[in-house]
Length: 196
Image (cartoon, rainbow, N blue to C red; front, side, top):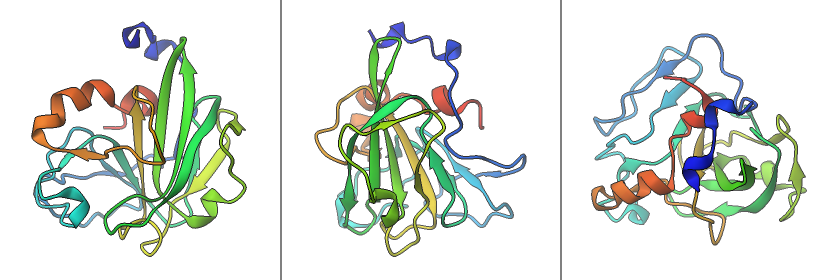
């Protein structure tokens, strides 16, 4: 069923308006490098051993299952496809997503969920489960350190073929979980395009 999606045949709206020039980060060293760019990209399926040090990662989850888009606080995040809100809320643990919105899209008859993490608290205002959003509609904004789980301002964008049970998906997994997770959480570049 998942294979029936013609990703290349879809027209997706931009999730974040990126400038012509931005940095692509290498986070495999376990540190966030300095960047000369206002916007930056953190890669999918990247081994980030040493980066995730809070309790929620149990010292063993460090393979990244989304794409991070770094930029200024307040940067707009938009729906990439006509969708509805399936979950939203606040994940308060240190290192977690902070404010999250998850949307459900039906693409070529297949249910696909998308998690937008590390948002500002005002991104949750006026939201309701089942609320319809149109492609290109603003659904949230990059949050600041104090409300986004304790990270530099960025969006964690992740796709899922597995229906979430709450406003959460595993954004990083252990090496033992990697193979199944790559099937469950496909490469966000299917939607974002060849951004790196």
